Image (cartoon, rainbow, N blue to C red):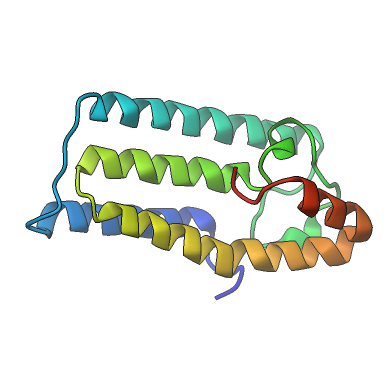
Amino acid sequence: MELKLPPILVFIFFAIMMYLVGRFLPFGFFDFFGRFLLAKILSVLAVLVALVSLVQFYRLKTTVDPRAPHKTNRLITNGLYKYSRNPMYLAMLLLILAYGLQMGNAFNTLVAAGFVSYMNRFQIIPEEKILLQKFGKEYKIYLSQTRRWF
């Protein structure tokens, strides 16, 4: 499973799981003042984070294919990547959280936690191993200075 599924498919799977939980679980509903506004803010933030991080990849002409980290020709450590090693995955998480808020079922937080767990195990850790082999000490320093998600 490592690096086999495109992260966008994983994102879609977990979004569908959230829909099913929100639609068919007869308990767990929550509401609070500003819930929909917070969901919109998280969505806008997610889109901005995704766009900025993609622009950084394209400007430096390195691969954005998360299934082929061995094709990476540059280590990006500035901009958003100074604060998060995985801003594109962070953007997906923000969208998942926004969708969970929209659905209004507290159990969707477990689905979001499942997304993070899956991404860590089957996408991020394998990527990090390959990048560590490719970039060595420079990447090891980056790992020690920058958090995985945020």
